[in-house]
Image (cartoon, rainbow, N blue to C red; front, side, top):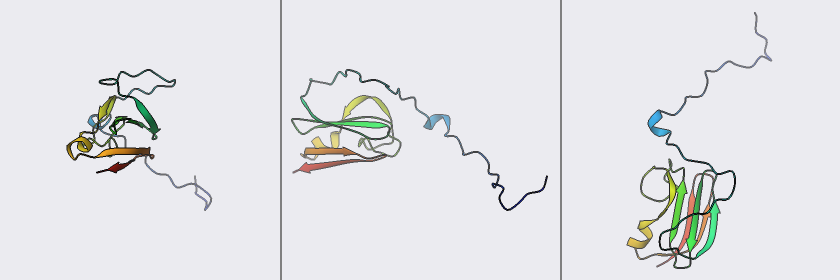
Length: 112
C-alpha cells in the first residue's frame, strides 16, 4: 500500500508504567464516608484529577489518592488510599488557611 500526505503517521503505543509505579488506588464513583484520626472538623475539601485534600478547623491538611508527582505533600511520590496529615506543616508550626488541588498539584495557603 502506498501512503498519501493525508495518512496519519504510525507511532508506537505509549509506554506503560512499570509495575512498581502502578500502585493500586481505589477510585470511588460515589461519595464515601472516611474515618479521620481524632475526628477533626473539616472546613474545606478540594479534589484534583486523582487526589483529594481536606482542611480542618485547626489548620491541618490531610491528603490521599495518587501521589506520583508529590502532590500529596508527604515528601515522596507514594500514593495512599487513606487520608494522611501533612506532617511538614505541623513540624514548621504552620497553620493552613486554604487548600486548592490542581490536576497534579496541591496549593496550601498558610499562616506562620
